[in-house]
Structures are given as C-alpha cells and as structure tokens.
Length: 350
Ligand SMILES: Cc1ncc(COP(=O)(O)O)c(C=O)c1O
Image 1 (cartoon, helix red, strand yellow):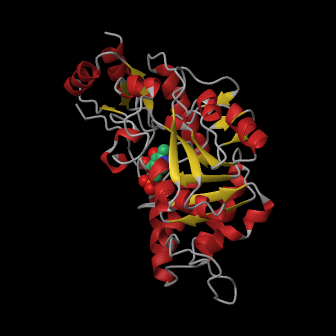
Image 2: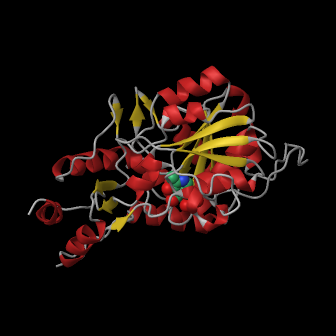
C-alpha cells in the first residue's frame, strides 16, 4: 500500500523540456521567461500586472514596501495563518496587529478587523486560508477606511470570490509557488500582482533593487527576482492550474467532511482541514492507513516566540486559539486516485 502524501508536486516532459531549454539558452536571469510568466499570470487571475519573485514571503515584503509602510504604521493580519503573513510586517519595521478569525470559515474576521483599526492602520492583509476566500466585507472595510488591502493568496491559486479570482480582489496580491502549493515552479518562487494602475509599473522595480531604467535605485529594494528556469516551469504549470483546482474541488466533494465553503465563492482547496476535538487520534488513524495528515497551524501567530515582546503576545484571540488546535490537514491534491479517496473516507467515515 503506497503512502498518500499531503502534497505531490507535478512534473512532466513539458516541464522538463522548459527547464532544460531555458538552461541551454544561457539566459538564466532577467529574461523572456519571467517577463512572459508575469504577463500570463496577471491575465490569468485578472490583475493588471504581475512580477515573479523568489517566494511568497518576498512578495509580501514587497507589497508592504509598495505602500511605503514602515515604522509607526500598523497592519492588521489574521491570528491564524502561516507566520510570514505577520513577519513581513515586522521586517519592514511596522507592527502587525492580530485580528481573530471567523468561527466557520477560519479567515480573518471582519468585525475584529474593524475593531482593531486605529489612526496608525495603513493596510489589512487578508489570507485566503487553505484556499477559502476571505469575506468580501474585508474589501468594503478597507475602502471605507482608506486602507490598502493586500491579499495573501499564497494558498489560493484559482480561488474565486464574487466572480473575482484571488489576485484581483485586493490592491496587491501575493502568491507562493512553494512545492506543495496549487501550482509550483520547481523550487522556491512567488508572484506579486496588482489591480492598481499607479502600482503596475512599480512591480518589476520593487523586486529589482528599486532600480529605474537608468539603473538608479530610486527606492529601497533588493534582488528578489525569479530565475528564468523557474519562470519557464511556472509557465507550463499555469496552463494546468484551472484543471487542478477543478480536481481539488471534485476531490473535496468526494471526501466525507463538513468544512464549509463561503457563499458565492470557489474554494482553492490547497488544504482540506478537518475540525476535530481529537486531532492526535485522527492523525494516528490516518497514519495507520498510510495517509499523511498534520495539525495546521498548531500555534497562533501572536504566541510565537518571535512576538514575545509584542503588545498582543499574551492576549487571547479566542477563536484562533480554539480552532488552531483542532484542524487536521488531510490530502486533497489532484493526483489522488479513487482508491486513495476511498481509503481516506474509510478513516473519516468507518
Ligand atoms: C498563507 C501563506 N502566506 C505566505 C506564505 C509564504 O510563501 P513562501 O513559502 O513562498 O515564502 C505561505 C507559504 O507557505 C503561506 O501559506
């Protein structure tokens, strides 16, 4: 019985040829592959422009720099997500303010975002957690308060909210191509996108030392460019991602679970998380059936040691705290066979 992993990166002859041809071309950086990948990705998700970069974390750092966010500023982030949603804020010298999550969809809670806005707030980073789009109220709140909305779409390639794809909902959106994600680039990688015309020209610059065409660095940046070989692989994967998201949705429909999907939206199903009072028992049962599963995320962000001196380190985010301990991610990736789905179901519904 073959073990079922939580993720299975896609690799085929076309990816291989794209990689080899790009290496053989001798054009390894700053070439036509990254330029085309950015253009194709933007047109796929409905953004105005996009620039490939080295990771989702780099994209988040760059997004904050685009809004000139720095010391003295506050950025509201969800309490339960991957750590770099918050550390990007700290890295630019601003303060992440942790908001609680929704009880049902586990994304950033609009009411708590509103409660945490101060005159220092400059932006909200909404995360489409596990591929579930965050509430459309987050967009409305940002518009009403003049705040930038940054989408952390690292887990949400192909997710849709009210007819808009992840990447076209916020002012700026950040994707990750880490190998477990809905699409990948054969290594580390990310994408920064914008829907705002005044930022479109700045994307390439921010990932390239803040340099203008005269090679003068007119703002702070560094080298966060994606290599050509990764961009070439990404272009091949982009052609498949819609199909993969469809299969993720079909798999999620076949698997026995009660995780809700938000109204008027398409879930990206990067992760299928099961809420259970006894996560260790579920993980052990999955393990006995040869299925990988793990708790996502065991520690909420403000409780991480890196935030030991943060004013919110000791506060309670009751829903984040309660739910984080109870979510077990199980496989939902597009390579699952029917036999594997049956095996997963026989653990969930013996
Ligand atoms: C929600 C979220 N934000 C940001 C990131 C960071 O992406 P990367 O690992 O490409 O830096 C990830 C990646 O795991 C993520 O899941």
